[in-house]
Length: 239
Ligand SMILES: O=C(O)c1cccc(C(=O)CC[C@H]2O[C@@H](n3cnc4c(=O)[nH]cnc43)[C@H](O)[C@@H]2O)c1
Image 1 (tube, rainbow, N blue to C red):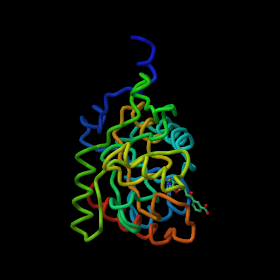
Image 2 (tube, rainbow, N blue to C red):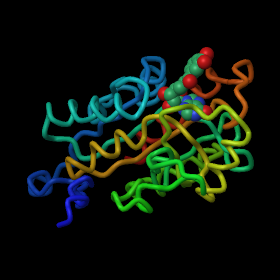
Image 3 (tube, rainbow, N blue to C red):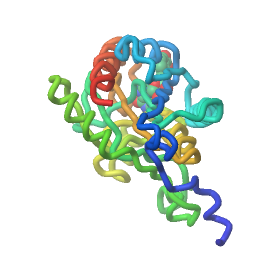
Image 4 (cartoon, helix red, strand yellow):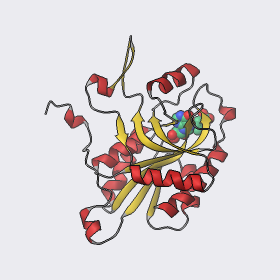
């Protein structure tokens, strides 16, 4: 081991612990949002379903990581972590009001700026800035959302500590991560915490705005909350 390996979370992931398997039960699902209004939208969608624990853990990857870690450390029966909330959609990939289910979660600002451009964690030799999501469950959700008539993409979702605010930055990100459909601020933090607990992760983003020049008046936050609620009603059915 060269010392850098220890910077990665444990890679092995188990959707259901062996004890849960023996007992033939699935375990609880932790849904972590950033703010209370997102939590309320998720709860309206989920309804009365004790399998889901929904909490608002704060804005940004650090808050998400700490809150997720605290929740997972406080109860041992979780089998899945879902980062959920509103997010920005990349032009031509995800429109306002649509849903993006993450195919992978990428810490897009984890690395170094160089004269030649952005250098990722991989390039620097410090591990990976990409974490995989629960592929089967994510695909199932995408298909169910489409069947329910909702516009949906299964695609990479970026995590950044700073909301993108210029066309140049949006183009740079889209060029650096082809196919990225959305950006938000919490997914990678929640995913990192989940991986430390050897749990699978998903990310669901309801698109409230376009990634690019800051135009607060164009944000459709209430529409995104409505989409998030509808998506979570479908989530409840497919899990
Ligand atoms: O500046 C404002 O007035 C303002 C009002 C409400 C929310 C904000 C945010 O910056 C929200 C950040 C929050 O929402 C997620 N989010 C939504 N859109 C994006 C985006 O384009 N890029 C990154 N994150 C986004 C994010 O996950 C945060 O939880 C500002």
